[in-house]
Length: 341
Image 1 (tube, rainbow, N blue to C red):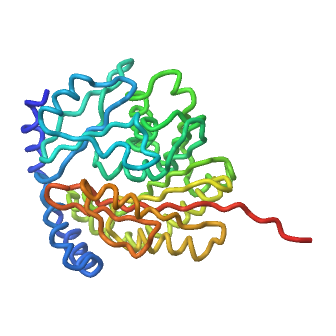
Image 2: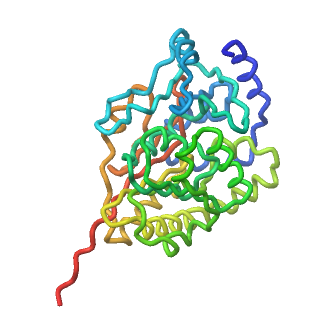
């Protein structure tokens, strides 16, 4: 299997860079990231440098693959480095941009591994999922983070929500490919507009993940339709409004004392720090949770840019550590104190 790596990764070279998007990113990110942008830019515009992590499926563990990855010099993301790091989650990182072939979906057969951007695991780890908890993945498709959550613990109930019907179908297939019975029985897939979830299920969940729709920097840079790309750039200013609305809904759905993690795969400050600042300044029931410890713990595998917020991290890609972009913020809903009288 590993002999086919090279051919698979070379297929990435055929991608066509979208100049409209790159020009916009150059303008914005050179201001927001300063000197770091040129390094990040080099990785983002060169798919041949992109890396892929291999998340093992604990429900169909790939023992032979694990041996092969050891031989190749791959290593796991630091297990046990955080007090709440789940021992059941294993993800291997290589030091080169080789990509393993994806497994095909076969009804009745569980896949052994999931290929992903390793930075995608940080929001999952930040959520600190425990056995028996009720969890909401508000914008769940294509399902990678839901699968990763289930590598960490056995929730009492997991609601995977996806408003887009086509993406919802993809989400269902992903879950079927990785998760066995009877665990599937504690998972529900819904197709609600995420902005309505708080009213539909108020104060229901112990943990909520909001992996919000965003300017997906990697895929936008390789938009094949330049007119569509120009329209996306024009509409981009509306995304923070949607993101704040999704967060407000998620906060309603969170029980008092519960934890919420917000994530995006963009570098954009307007969709990251500014969204979280808006929530923190307008909602007295929400407190920031310091996650600087995650950056210290994982600095060997990831490069972090300053965010100006202790409750958030920004993973930026660089050569050899081509993970991200990924913004992660962690919030807690406090218990309301009853008013006197």
